[in-house]
Length: 414
Figure 1: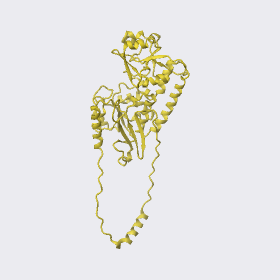
Figure 2 (figure 1 turned 90 degrees about the vertical axis):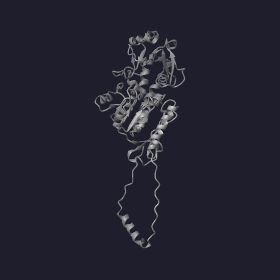
Figure 3 (figure 1 turned 45 degrees about the horizontal axis):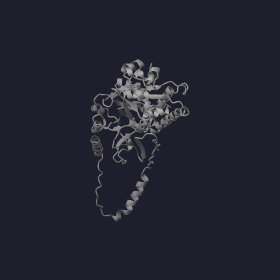
């Protein structure tokens, strides 16, 4: 609680300082009227009116309002002269929200947005602290607006990697880079927006330091969305800063249609193959809960998830032997850590070979698209393309149902 209060105090201080009081106009005594000048003044007024050029009426471009239908952790509202984005749950257990007023750059200072952080739009540059933002930027043609990233080590997008190598994008540390945040470089880049996620712990988050430096930090909590479509809808959040949310909404609707079409293909199938996920870490094994991001995907793909009895949207934890007791005879095993083949999996722990899925060769991992450092595109563009993830799973559990389909993110271990 103390950490949250500290962040809140910092937030209020910074943005409160940005708001200056409006001075009341000074009263001026009126001079006594000279009635002898009345007729002359009227003539001058008429002449002045005749000389005044015609003023063209100001045309306000209509804004196509976009709705938020699946995402639970942000709202998008439209007001006269600006848009308001509010991140309602910036991190697990957060007791505060963060609001961003997206104001056309020519109208900044002319509209009252309350205590929201003002972001002039459309933005032209951004620093990102998560690879999950890349596919959304690419969809709206704004990938080249990236001027800084935390690190490119785990980035799959080749354009971003090339631009980092060529010096067009700077690595600034912090985030998932395992390097200290270089605040000086961030300030020098002078980005219109810095987008990052947060945990609520100041010692791990980048936004407290950057807010203190006066930087325009925007929090993005896409990772907290339990539904795949909700997570993908954060593309509208990102696009709104570029005034391209209508374009993002169109692409999103097309993706939802593909997702629902694939989902409907398994509705009438009674066969539900058993499946479990992940691998042990120091004898602790995490499994997704029933209504988590992965839990929803497994259900929509027509699988019998063996840990669906675990209520919630997060993860549950068990010991190795407890997992073996439940999943020993499971038909499929997904996401076994960093393993790229069966031999390397068994080398991690000989007990892995005791699972029936291992013996049958029905082990699949998100290694079809990875970079040299193991950065998987599943965790990058998969967030924006849950339809492809769903179709991968359907192809694994119900091969042949999607005619001509080939796995995109997943690969069978041999």
